[in-house]
Image (cartoon, rainbow, N blue to C red; front, side, top):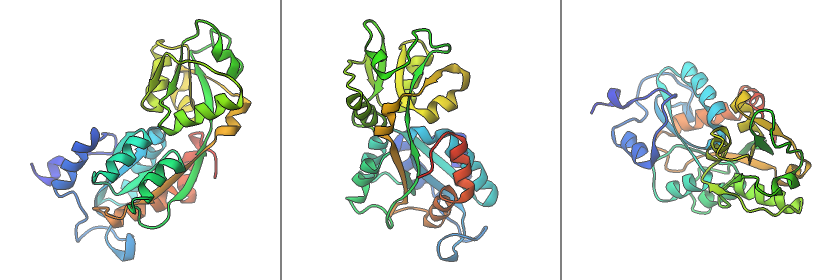
Length: 268
């Protein structure tokens, strides 16, 4: 298969690490021609592969469109998933240029292995909300309302940042509950509510925002005890270091901050 045939637009998600590896092996790397502006004046061309937390999907997709417009010779390919699984993939050698995690703890899994080029930069923060069906039919107003008998609540798995944040918030509010399921990432948890397979879920406010009128968000004060910092870093073994540097610069720029704040993220 030719390099041209394998190149994808940003709207197409890479399905798992195997697809990412296929992209890398097909030769999707910076070429010697194209626009300039990368690390050390190198051309910003080819595919930049970004591993990013699921909660960044909407805002990063928008930023990737801007990135490709600014660098016509470059394209962005994403792998959106739970931060812990992304970190494990990177540490196991999955080819990636940039890692954006939903917590400092999951980023540390990668930095401890010496796989980042320099120190990660915190670019936004995120805070939990209770997601319910539109109209909040069960009248959920507080965190303790989630413990009502018969209420079906979904949480993110404890190993991923949204799950760790949920556990911290529940502990702060003295609300013990047994969810009907633990989901691998925040998008999966929210989908359970949208499909009416759950009455409520603890998810990020940005995901409630992205879902629009498909769900309703309930703020609760204990979420202040579980705010997640989001770090981003270029990876040491990035196949496309010039494009990786340029993408990180866009995310951390004033322009990038505007897109992220509009999506509901908090400034660091």
